[in-house]
Length: 315
Length: 315
Image (cartoon, rainbow over all chains, first blue to last red):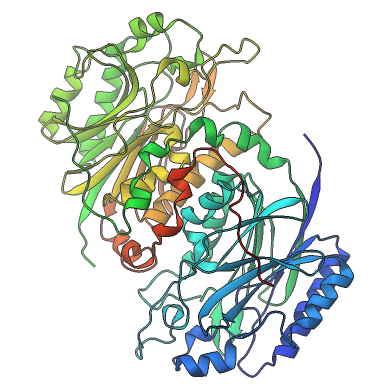
């Protein structure tokens, strides 16, 4: 086995409150980027919507949201120092933010930036959770379906930093299709950020399940696709609204090899053996040898669940 | 929430040795069926290839295998007493066996039998693991690709026993496509049997990962598809070749709610709340609302992994 190592850092963030400035938030990102580089990271993963509070929890107009929380350019004046620092350190990064396009469209977006501070990959979130209507009886809103369009660029994988890296965002991690589409493009690593409220506003879900489902999804998708996964939380209580931590780095074995210990700004790091996934890709998950797409048709033919296909019975 | 309950039993089997007769094995199944019915089960799940030893571990000719290990009819004279007992108890069951068709084709097959002892569903294993060539240097073989054809009937779901039940076999549980195709047919429960060797003959996989991957796959697939899953091992050392136990019943929350304690014949039972999955189906995994098949195309377009799709970059 080759012992080629890839230094992967995940930079979890504690709360960003409504009154925090972009500049103060970027300064926190830069401090963690320095720590990541000092520990030998080639790539540092920041959270989803890492420049502002998780604003889809608040009912407001699209115009108000755009003015306060969206980025019309990237880099922007506020984020340019982060790109400059990355270039000087020679480190790549993943960053999530609310994207306003030139045409005024809104996406929940992440980017992959290489060691030359060049944006090489962009992803617009496909699995938007929550709702678009106002739920005044709920303790908070989850308005991703109001403030964002469904991503229109698919799930991508980019050759960078000597490997192949895919990206997704938050709720995407619960959907096995997300990771399969990337492993079918030969991703060896997938990185993502998330903001996961600690309570479910739709039903009385036992609170411990929030963390369990987060880790279970990362672990199963890492194993079943022979991937390294790095996942960065924004967590703790933003203006009183609590979100789970649990930032993690998961190996292609499905094992959690690093996990955050706090609900504050915290860097975790793993020197990833990039050959570990080969054992799985070459045997149990040798896709070319074992997959049977002729029996997977419903995955793309149906959106919602429908009737069982009619089948004969033995007599 | 409706409190409709479904009594589900999983009947794990200890070893079946080469010299054990079909009759002695069926007697063991019948004893566990009686226990399952006594505990209130509507359905009892038996293992994969539950009538013989896990013969794909032995190099032999197809003709020898057919003569010793395949069933040319179901029910057969040896298994008729199991069907008769099921009818008298009014209990359904899942049973795995090696199927020889009228035309002489060979499949690794399971059946679902209803409370009237009628076979209502048949499944022929699609994800065949292992190899077809002789590996004399290996401590044992894994010749499923030699002795069986790939299943030709897809992944089915059958309305029975007041719910909708899908079935698969062993290695299928590691592939998220298996469960997604069944949940898209409105399965509320999936049952399966397995024979999982405790050692990997292809690489030095740490031994504890065998059990971890088994449970991880069940848990993630249950959660991500809002399914009840019942999984029955054949386990312990068959003529010296050890297989893992870990028979389990997993809730739609992804939690293991019953697990075997032994590597011998053992019945586990859960009174399943069939409404539990509704919370997941109606919100986080509301497929009609959240799935985006237009971005899942590679799952059916590719078999093996290929190049990343070319994408534009931001400038």
